Image: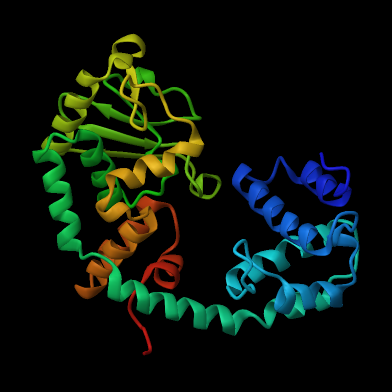
Length: 305
């Protein structure tokens, strides 16, 4: 607990059962930015609304010392200070209005980013080539990671899976699993971003190439023989990597080191070009999100240049 930020710490203590670890980290980072801006000894939640609005919209700088321009970051700052003020029944009406005024800036920023992405992202054909080469080069980790990204539209957390040959090994609700059976594969998603909304997911499917890659991978890692399960995101011995190292590990295996978000945008773009609504609906289901979110946040179409 930070003795200089008691109101924020009290908010976290009251809400930690309802908030994810990543959400708490995000709020803490935003609150720290405000705290650092105003100086030690001045808790942001106790600051006047106008002073906070002036700081967020005009005065604050980013980590490189450049004036803060990204409207998404500004909105995150507003969200954080508003929830803490609300928790303690402190005035926040003007902050809410200032946040709402950023909506047009957010839209403009999103459209600008779409233009950049549309002009720089790889194509779906290039993704498929990368997947094919991974198998040819016996890079089984890369093949499995990219297969799941391209066919199950996974986020990073979804790729934190344990590979096993026994369905009996899949009892832990805090793990995701890939089960290899003689006749099919089962992908079980228990832990993912929107699990509280959509619950545990189970996908039964068949794919000879993925089955082969999984079988070869577990043969190469000593840890599988000891535990009858293998973490996909692991070191050469099969020891699971810490959560803080997982994103870097995943990007090491993707085309041009792209993020899972960019891979999903490429897949969405390919389906939109074919007017494949059924495919988009299935993609949203497998990812665990609604179709409107997919269109709003991942579509590269409807760009006004």
